[in-house]
Image 1 (cartoon, helix red, strand yellow):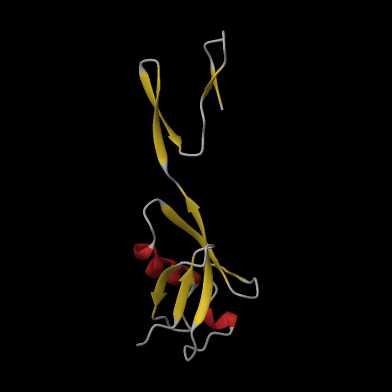
Image 2: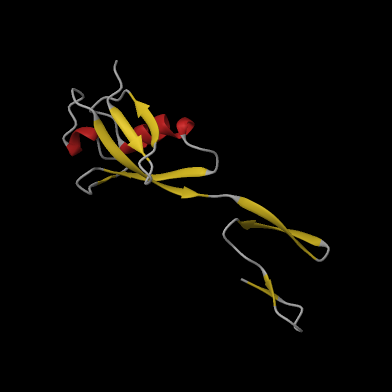
Length: 111
């Protein structure tokens, strides 16, 4: 079967090219795409070019996909990267976008 569903990141970069059937659900497509994603990237859902969200129980055919054309879907993802920060005797595991700021004089940490 030829590749007929292209999954794109927001940047437009191709995340995966999948050979899919019209009867596939959003959940089945997620399972097929997951091994192709970058490390630390978790798939939330897909959005079609007209803005329709493909739910986990919806079928590709619900978006008008017949399998004869190439369909492009936008991958909505969550990126989870971790960093370790030394805080006294302990190391904290935090999402990469968090910053720890030591409050002067208080000895407390805030985000």
